[in-house]
Length: 318
Image (cartoon, rainbow, N blue to C red; front, side, top):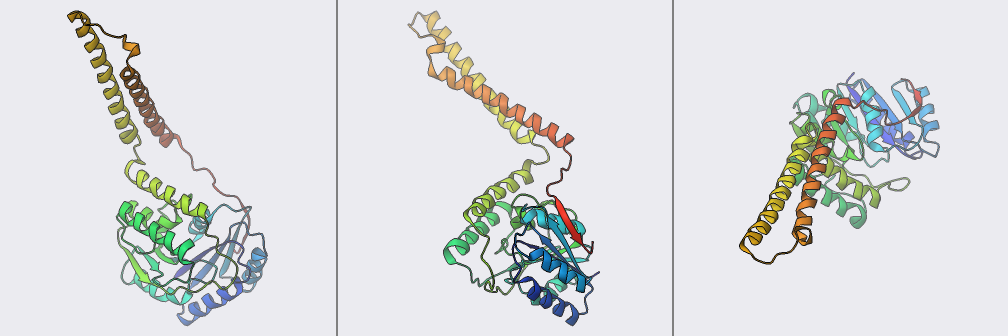
């Protein structure tokens, strides 16, 4: 199979029929063998009913319905797990991503041998303050932190070699940073293509302040995990030992200073009346806790099991 098109969605009943027709037209014009995977992330409208209707007419259309809203990353995770195409395309269901871009993305993966190609919506029709500005801030921070030099991490239109999506773990709000996850997994040939951005035709944007904050937190998480995710003791253990040694040396210095003053006949205060003693003691306690955190992290990594992160209520054509 040439293509798997993975489309996560939430309350997009108006756009689904039009999107399906558009994709099918592009697939037929290019003689691709394909599957379309709609992942309904707990929609409260008629989205699932429309997916069932479309899938009954087109066997290449498959659907997964979550029991409730689990988030875009979980929807992509479910779609990636079932994608069978040599090239996997992700796109949004709101008609802001053009299926006409798919043939060139497919060519870049299959002929130019890219592992991943990310779309770049150079000209956007979103609100400049509430979406475009946060997106630019995200992209700048992601470039500086990850070393992956893309202009638009937030673009939902991406193409992947199937091997990539089978070897990365998407969770939280980390769908924005899939190129970073791919790089950390050893896929270094990551490209970018300028794509057309369509103005939203139906419904309202799901982008809000909570996603803005969560996105930054996930960026920090990715940076930390890429460096210390496999061996948390390397970070927590080292920090803990450093804090403990600083506290221990400081305590020893305070006690030694008191003994010297007593021996020399100088008037001195009790060790417990010296505020530096409590600072040193606190450093030792924090150091011990950091060391234990690293130790517990190592134990968790060795005993963790892959818990189910979402519940599927229905499937069609799968």
